[in-house]
Structures are given as structure tokens and as C-alpha cells.
Length: 357
Image (tube, rainbow, N blue to C red; front, side, top):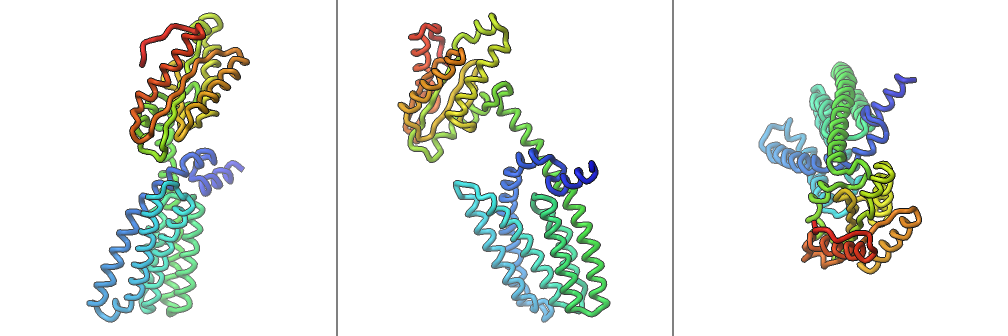
């Protein structure tokens, strides 16, 4: 059972667990889209050059003219579609996968058509494409293997139907042999690529995530702060929260109790403002950004959060601010929310105003 389990994970997830594969699948799609933007235009140009060159070559090459033309048009359309997906505001992951498989299908179809156009010669180009094509993109190994099997079957059937028995026999043997080698190479290379993506994902996660609360940390906050004005929002709202009495709680009940306070605030902030827009920027300081948020509504949400935390025995001071997004000075936006938080903290007697960060 362990062997079958490992084989299943290798074919479905490239040797990762299902959870790990799901973590890196978005990165794999992004990598595939970048590759499409490179490979498709290059392939289009190559086929275009072959099309032009075929008009000056002998009759054998000229037989491929319409094949070159069809491949050139197909790759041109894929190139246009991939650049359209790259410019889209919302990533169409299904569209990326479809384009990647269409790219491979075009290559297979081109190689098979050229090979079958010349029935007196072995299917050399088909064999070469069976080896190389599956290595171009990152996907489930089983999907790429299935596509290779179908391409291998197509070569075998076409050769058997159109070529002499001797040549067809060589084609079938070579297609099965190199198709199998291609599948093995694909599984090995895909496993390496997926592991590399996972390791990069882990490094990014650790560098951007606060280990205690699971929120984005100060490093991530600093790197993303100036990205907000470049988004689509017309108004940006900021929420600032600061734990009251953390030092006293640590001294009286221990650091586990202080950690519980911080985690409680972090959970509430994340529920209100989302995983991507909530940051722990200091020991007991939290910031949330709300694109197109109404500052009065943010204050109401923070007030409700304070009441919920108070029921749990935790005290927190909060503040909010907003600004026009396109002209936003993000640090001023955060400072204004911080000032309001300190005003609330001072008014409640929870502490004295500290020097602004």
C-alpha cells in the first residue's frame, strides 16, 4: 500500500502531498503563463520562417507549406491569448492550463502531420517532440503522461495506416520507446520543478508571515505598503489596533497569556480585513487596509471588535483613517489611524501616548 500510495502521489502531485501541491499550483500556473508568453511567440516566428523558406526549397519541403501555415496561425493565436491573460486583472488559471495543453497539442499535431506527409521516411520529428514537449510546462505528471500516451498512439496509428510495414514498424517501436522515456523524464523533471516551487513558497511564507499569529509580518507590510495606491480602489481606509496591558499580562500570567491576547486580536482583525490586508507590524500593533472602505464603517467594525474582545477579557485600542487612493501618502494614512488609536487609549486610561512610529 505504501508503494501504491507513493506512486499515486508521484503521478498526481509530483511527489508532494495534496496540500503542498495545492499551495504551489498557483505559482505553477504563473510560471506556465510566463513560459507561454515566451514559447508561443518564438514558435510562431519559427513556423513563419519555415513557411517563407519552404517557398524557396525543393518539392519535398514545399509539401509542408500548409502545415507550417496552420502551425504559425495556431501559435500566433496562442501568443495573443497568453498576453491577454497576462494583462487581465483576474488570473484565469483554467485558461492558462488550457492554453498550455493547446500549445503542446499544436506541437504534436505539427510533428505528426509533417511525419505522415512523407510516408517514405521515418517519423523522426514526431519522436523528437514526444521527448521534448512534456518538459515545457508544469502540470500534474499524470496529465502530461496521458497527453504523451495519446500522441504516441496517434503516431503509431498514423504510421500503421499510411506507411509501409517496415517503416511503420520502426515508427511504432521508436514512438513507444521514446514516448515511454519522455513520460519518465517528464515525471522526474516535473517532480524537481514542483519541489523547487514548494521550497520557494515556503521561504516566501516564512519571510512574510508572523509565526505566532499567522498574519503578514512587518517585512511584508513594508514591501506592500506603496502598492496600495497603484490598485483599483478610489479610497483607502486604514484600521490600527494596539493591545492594552500586554506587558502587565505577561508579567502577571506569563507569556502564554500574552500570546493568547495577541492571537485573539489577530484573529479578529483578519476576520474583518482579510488575510491579504492584515499585518502585525509590531509587538502588539496591528494594521488592516480596506480598499474602497468607508472610514465610519471601519470605526463601527473596530468598536464591535473591541466589545467582543472585552467579553473575552482582552482590552484593545483602535483607530481608523481614510484617504484618496491615487494621492495617498500611505505612511501618513497609517499615522493618522495610529493617532486616533492613541487618543482612544489615552481617553480610556489604558496608557500614555507614546512616540509615533
